[in-house]
Length: 411
Image 1 (cartoon, rainbow, N blue to C red):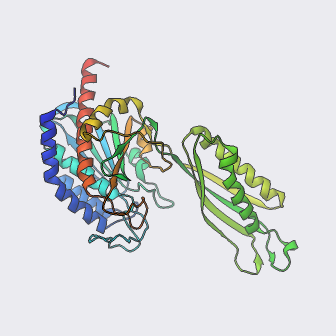
Image 2 (cartoon, one colour; image 1 turned 120 degrees about the horizontal axis):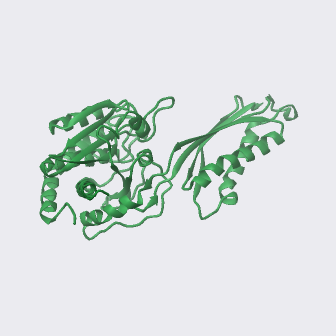
Image 3 (cartoon, rainbow, N blue to C red; image 1 turned 30 degrees about the vertical axis):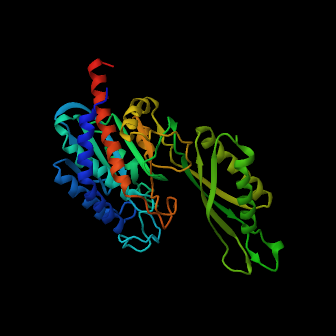
């Protein structure tokens, strides 16, 4: 039996509809004032001020600019959490909206402003139900969801390091991402849902010479071109094609003058995998390929491979437990299965510690041309805010109720 009966569901719908316009205004304010990872100071001030209005226990400065609000229910019980990422990205907005970004070259192109509005609105709604809540709810507003600046810690890993899952201890956590699919379509699967995300960089060390005397040098740029081409063949010819993987080289540089053979060339990229087997195998294959080409020409190289973000993996039991609640919140739409996606999200770090459930929420505006995440024209449908709030309210209330039943039964 769900904790959200028909009467409670109707009450939730009424509260959500009442608060939705205010959350839309907050979303637009955040969209106009986007801030990059670990620099979300004004974003954090807005979030903490709104949480303080509710009388929640509010922590600021968590993982540099993160905010955590704790809603204590009137009845004892477990603690569950929901996370919203709050940072923007370096993209110049081209969407024709009246609340366009005021910060040149920075934009909420991945929907973190929508995420923040949904989770904040959920706090507003559930605060009015705290006399019925069994346990506690942590509302986690996490900075650096897109990754911290180079040389800095940040994001989910730092929030965990600073104790966001403790005091009180969190038993389960929910996360989500708006998705360029039909408005209100929710997708989730058991097990790996988003990819491992790793990065690498390679420096090839040749020998400089005058361009008219190529025999005196070792051309690092030519070697880099061969290595890049060979690495692109690695995925298609060295791995099981039924186990997806992606290798992308996104930056390359080399040389100092047009008439000199380059002494050095450097390139960087990412690898996305779904299996731990491929995650371990690919760097070994990469090193072997680079070594064979570069040493064959008498040059040298350095190669580093960093395991950055693990796969977002839905806890099977938690998903099974919450699927009826998700479907109930969605009404006729129901949760749709989806193939694992090759995107990444550092929400994965929470799932390494405690049971986690992550879903994709369709937010494509049917009146506008389809745009992808990270597009400068990204303009999600704001009606997704109300839909997301409803989903989270149902999930959080039902999860706490389920935890309470398990504790009473001694399981």
